[in-house]
Length: 207
Image 1 (cartoon, rainbow, N blue to C red):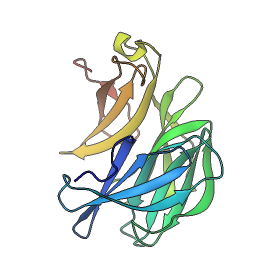
Image 2 (cartoon, rainbow, N blue to C red):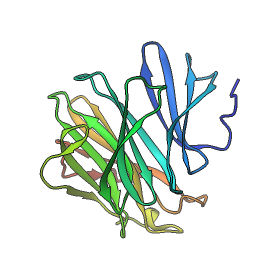
Image 3 (tube, rainbow, N blue to C red):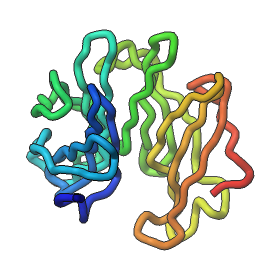
């Protein structure tokens, strides 16, 4: 019931019209979608994004309630770009790069309709947020949020990456991964702020 779901990583999951759509890192040349009605039984769907370059990983798909379209934020060869589709299982058409020397993009829309794109800038593997005028257009300058400062964030490698934003009871929770991704010391922590732009305070009980 997992139908080819082995051998993938970095899953982003979107719920739409009664189905879950999972987009993972796969063969490093594009993204396939996996579809489920219960988050347990999955079927492999079509390839939804093709890249002409290697190093394709850590996708995020965002459904915009304003225009109804689906936006794929991809990492390809060390840069972040965006692609668009009319359905979550359709081929996403590339709209071009957004941020150079960056990985692990995640789009968040606040309750007031404002957009924020979280990502990791390198060298340094520092988490930033870019305010957005729309899902495809930047607005203003990026804000630096988190960098490796704790001992657990430097085990095997000094990295903070994979940002993911959750809002709960008015507070903003920024989840992130740290350490060496190919080691047993790789772990997840979170930081909390009163606004999506921070400042964020790391949880002292991380990871």
